[in-house]
Image (cartoon, rainbow, N blue to C red; front, side, top):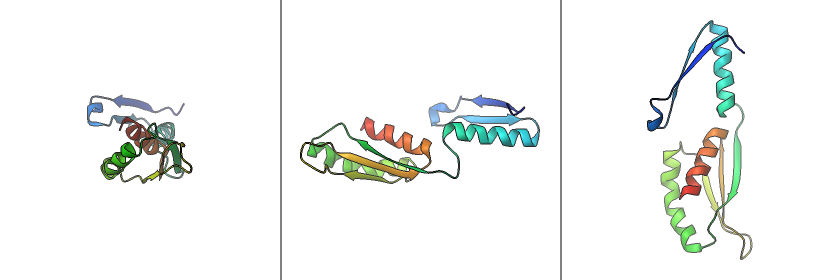
Length: 115
């Protein structure tokens, strides 16, 4: 759509990232970069916050997760993670993630669910 050529190098994906190389006219490569960033949720302006329910309703597992949160925050660019106790007994524990760029918040959410 932009007239630029985009090459995605994924030989670095085992390190947690891939490279995007752009070729073409300056205006076309600029537009292509903007489109790629928007597609990946990496736009500069808009941030998001998510509240997700955690699978465990066990308070011991919740306390153990609280110990892991600082390491998760450090690993994922210091996106804030607030663990929230249930409002009423029998309700699930929750985590509030963000604010941050959508791609980062989704990555933290996936890492949190793996714990």
